[in-house]
Image 1 (cartoon, rainbow, N blue to C red):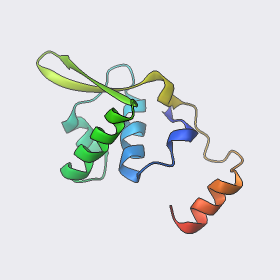
Image 2: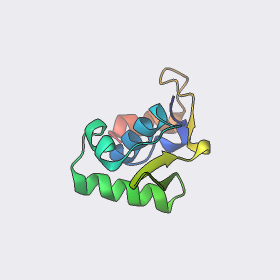
Image 3: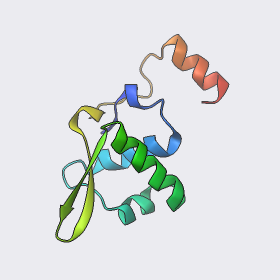
Image 4: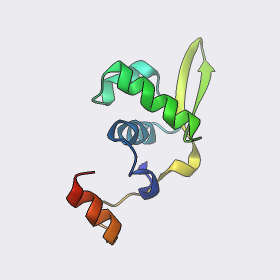
Length: 97
């Protein structure tokens, strides 16, 4: 599983966080676990998590004295990078975004 197509036009770090969380959607991940899976420094990761939380794409819960981050259900789904891309997607790719 990966983040749905409509969430893939976000910042690279945010998409990486969503994809990492999609792999562990039932168990969630701690910040330390995310840090090992996402190629970003702690400040970038913290900023990405804050933005995703503010946009209602992730939730944080307390479990056994640790904070676990989970993706919201509506964010995760099938993603096929080979499926037909829209004109806007092709332009974004061409522009390097």
